[in-house]
Length: 409
Ligand SMILES: C[S@@+](CC[C@H](N)C(=O)[O-])C[C@H]1O[C@@H](n2cnc3c(N)ncnc32)[C@H](O)[C@@H]1O
Figure (cartoon, rainbow, N blue to C red):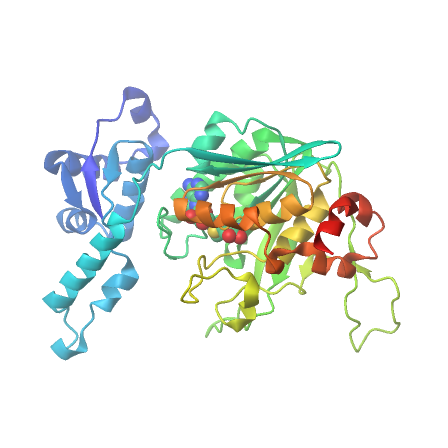
């Protein structure tokens, strides 16, 4: 990654000691001296690890003191350079090939601070209007400005800082930086949430302690730790149990949720159950009836793909997951918020459930995906197929309006 100098920090910025270390000062000095320098070179000059450099670059970039040139070579691309024919050394030809590819990719990219681009889809409903707002840009920038509306429910599914490839996100940050950033986001969402409003924060299970900490510090009250057993094979681990779930923390603004719809599902009877149930069971904090959209055929039609069958977004959430969250913690007319909207799963479900929705996504290519998805609801995204499963919920007609059903039947 190439970084370019923009400006000195102001006195006020310098006084924010927590953000400003001797390391970041030194790095900024070197960038200033050279005007433009690659992160690898910075690592050579300073002797700091590349991960330290990247973490500092990320702070300096967010402060607006430097900018990234679009050229970026991801770790996986560097792995492609490994050429066994030269005894494990990087062959210069293969390095050039990777740089060429990265440059080509960078030409397709938009500047690092994308323009704010707003689309509003307004759907008419008898009692008023439901609006689905798709916003392109950095969610923290939007949140600092204010959402313009009070939010009733948020689904928070950020990149997990696990080294995945995102066009506009460094997914390998120093954990303190990453969690500090999420805490800010959680703080702003809290500010714009109505009293008793809810948040569902999804993460890897190993980050549960961080999630608890930042949620609490941002003002949220813990309600449940939901274990989403994703119905996929466990990830083996030599020194501890294999991993087979992801966590979702349900938290509220204030001690009690303003509403909580107790959903009943037609959960299949297990061999050890004593009695047949004729009216289903309540949903608990273990969700083992929703399949993750994996890369294999299990992802089925729901996973959005390009013409070559490649998935458009590796982290696309299942419709069934958002259906459960939105049904449990909102009613028609509420405002549902997704600051990391990706392919727009939250919006697609909110739309069908007659909730207003605001989605923010930094990557313009996903904005296009989301808009297409919203314009015409695909059969794979149609939530009607799940209605029977929830038929034992006492207030189902209230929380899942029937007036739109005819459109899907
Ligand atoms: C884990 S994915 C969310 C997937 C989504 N739940 C879905 O169903 O498609 C996280 C998304 O956040 C986006 N993103 C990363 N940084 C962002 C930021 N600062 N503001 C808004 N979106 C961001 C990424 O481009 C990515 O699409």
